[in-house]
Image (tube, rainbow, N blue to C red; front, side, top):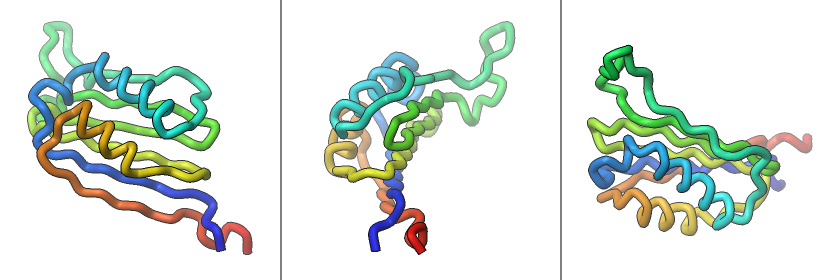
Length: 129
């Protein structure tokens, strides 16, 4: 039986210094990834930096980084990063097909991670029951 959807989770370690704290890089990554994996955005990417106080000091220094999302006709993509640890997580959820190698290689090119963990989960396996 065909699942309702699929989740691809990519955890990237030892990313290029500065890449986990780069709003524009992560915005462009989301924008270009959608094209590469042949999906359809419903809105432009939404990307934010972790909160800073009035003196531009990180409110949560151990979590300083960027979070982003893009909503798709096929579902959505989320990304979260922690610059201090040079760690980035990418979650792609789709009710369609997904070539995970395209997503992984584009992430490798963009963030230059040293190693990664991947998980692929079928979702809604009993949806049609």
